[in-house]
Length: 158
Image (cartoon, rainbow, N blue to C red; front, side, top):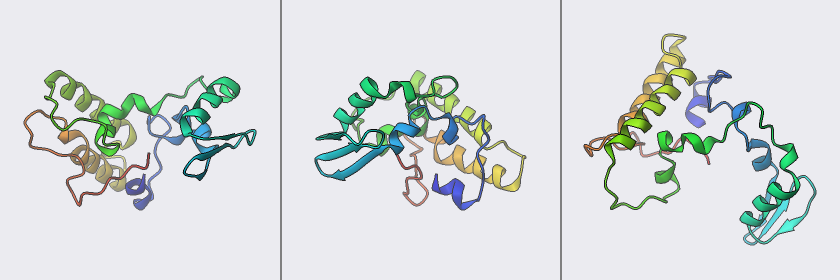
């Protein structure tokens, strides 16, 4: 996360966004994208025409390499992080669901508290406020807040 790196801040291990908590991180690091229609498995070097076939290969041949003990899928926090906007998968004409907005805001605030504990350090306090403003405040049906409103930059690489 560039905004975290810029502050030279290290995420606590209990933060869901900490790299060690990402169930599929190792698999993602073993995806080799060679060309438009060419992907390669970094474990066994087998080639595929599309990323979805490589994902199926991981499920079928390398699922034993997943650390399912304590890791979680980062997709579980996509609602809080506005992944739909980043990946442009949400229709612009959908009605806002107040219950979903409240749930995502609560999840987002929990991430802010765990990942950037307020009053722990100046960097942590700054990042906590930034995270709340950039991500959490946009979870509303009033139409007021929009994620990434400061400078229009997306700070997560997916």
